[in-house]
Image (tube, rainbow, N blue to C red; front, side, top):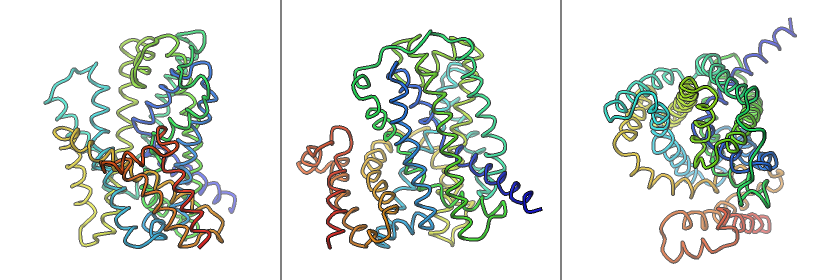
Length: 424
């Protein structure tokens, strides 16, 4: 009896892990690995190891950090309660309705245009149906395991495996191509930089509350068990990301050799799918993008809705979710370019802060002093905010710091802040 109960719990935990994978795996996750494979060529696998460190390791550490702390507000609250409120709102809005949610519809529609043509009415109708369906699925955030983990995630995996199998059985090229200059000398380091650009650690901070709800819905209700379950679900999702990213990277390596000159990850995938399967390949790839984008859209609507419902309990969750779905639909059709010009710099400003929150959470207990949290975040923000947003001469100064050209100008100030916090 005990063994069967453990097996049942393990199966439920696996489904929650599938759900978390579905929420992570959006359009960007489809595009980055194939492009890396095409660019890295014969040094593809060292580059992939570096990519996995920052594109998988960091987000899964984010899931674990949020689980350990008891939620994003609690994690950010280790710095200061007011900082926690401001930071959480910025994270949820900038990566949700102001960026990723609208882009799920616009990106997936782009992949459909070779099949259905491009028209403004067509895009509007598609986005209306897309967000209405996403809202319906997100309406019960505690049931995402049943809808994403049990149905849509397996469907997505089957389609990706079909594309990968075609690449293995009918390779378009005998091997990988010549690596681009950026990868030739230090492929692993370039892979780390590419993985950093996914910014999935911010998404990891978003998803904790919804994963906890789904664990409770499958019978894991004790607080400590929910935290352990969230971490284990994160590890399952991380393992799935590793396997799928490896398949997509290999696909990109073969496609890059067979069809050189593809400028984006989407172009790399399109060239290979069309070369392998013709018109059917276009349908296959469009289906992969639509399902992946839909899953991420549902996860983000649910996460943002849950957070703002907790922040403003007088507002019902369905109304909040409907508001953000409608807002995202409008932005996807009429105002995405303008909002991206604001949200992308904000993301670049807060992403280093999110990373330091995750890192400090895993420092040994004796190092987790209030001074370490506050000075680590303060020194990071003093570089990342002026470097990402227009602050005139101050921005120029911050962008002149070591590693700034690689996007890591915040690293030295962060280390100085943490070190100063340890000395106080």
